[in-house]
Amino acid sequence: MKRLFSCILLAALTACTSIPNYKVDSQTHRATAYNERVRFIVIHYTAGGDESSIRALTGPHVSTHYLITSRGEEPIYKLLPEAKRGWHAGISEFQGRTNLNDSSVGVEIVNPGYRVEGEERRFYPYTEDQILKVVHLLRDLSSRYKIDPTRIVGHSDIAPDRKHDPGPYFPWKRLYKRYGIGAWYDEATYSRHLNQEEYEALTVEEVQDLFRSYGYPMRVDGEWSEYNKKVVRAFQMHFRPAIYDGEMDLETYAIIRALNDKYVK
Image 1 (cartoon, helix red, strand yellow):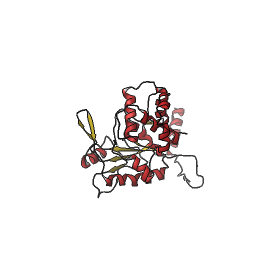
Image 2 (cartoon, helix red, strand yellow; image 1 turned 120 degrees about the vertical axis):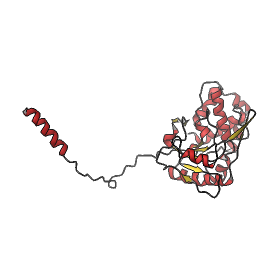
Image 3 (spheres, helix red, strand yellow; image 1 turned 45 degrees about the vertical axis):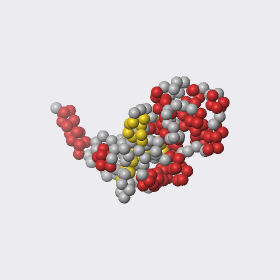
Image 4 (cartoon, one colour; image 1 turned 135 degrees about the horizontal axis):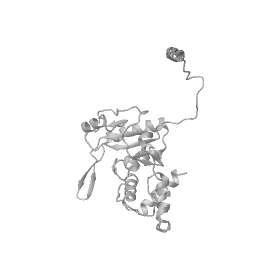
């Protein structure tokens, strides 16, 4: 009985013990070894109109950090704090990182995407206002987070087997040439590698490894499977939008080789 009483008394005393209101000092000592959550910027089209896009992106299933509508007079809408993890990338991979929702800011542009005519996909262009808003946003984000230019990507770059956005009308070359945004190859290096003998001397695996080294989720297996062709197609839509048939050719080789020479250490 005494033992039971002692246990009850100890429990009561423990429960009544208050925890001091300790001060948290965030100024005296500061860590210097850290990095930001945001390492990528992913560009999307919404595949819908303004109102349907707003409803979808403020609903329970998908989200993005920024939305640019088709209405030129409207502002850029910030739907989610950049510190929060948006649901826009889905199953994804680039430069060895997977699940890019964890490490990216999503930018959605209202655009219908494409229509199907026979066996062809016909993509829709963007408005000038939309592109200028993208420029404004990317300048700010890439500066604040010190984003590597190769990490400003499209949804199709990180999920080539299931996505096409932002499509071949997104002006990656213009963004680089006119505004210094993103990655692009040097023409002189491209011309040097536009060499049939050089290209044919490489094995399929060596060519595939160039895509992998740059960041694309290419399977280095010596086969141009349907999946690997989709990777090539995504690359072509980004860097050679005039022809994006998914077929590996000399020009595509010269571009990926020039990009590796410029950006891959």
